[in-house]
Image (cartoon, rainbow, N blue to C red):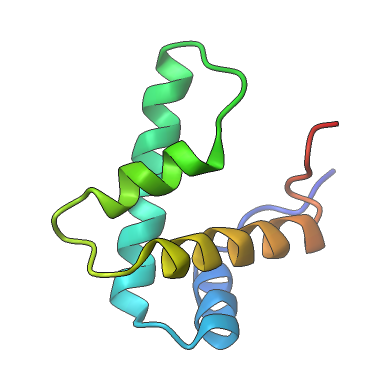
Length: 90
């Protein structure tokens, strides 16, 4: 049985790794979830990370660069993979 996602632990991991504003990190994760939920409703199976980043950077409340958003998402993926909650498709 895979481990379950501990959102507070994930947030703290990203904060520790990136040293970015916790409120902005939370916004990025919230917008990422919204994007993924919409994609899932449309039946999308493959999601391009660049599309996710463009979507998040385009939100008016996100005050981070594309690089910062990409760093947050990559750090999130590192956490998820480390905890057996995600992996990359071949």
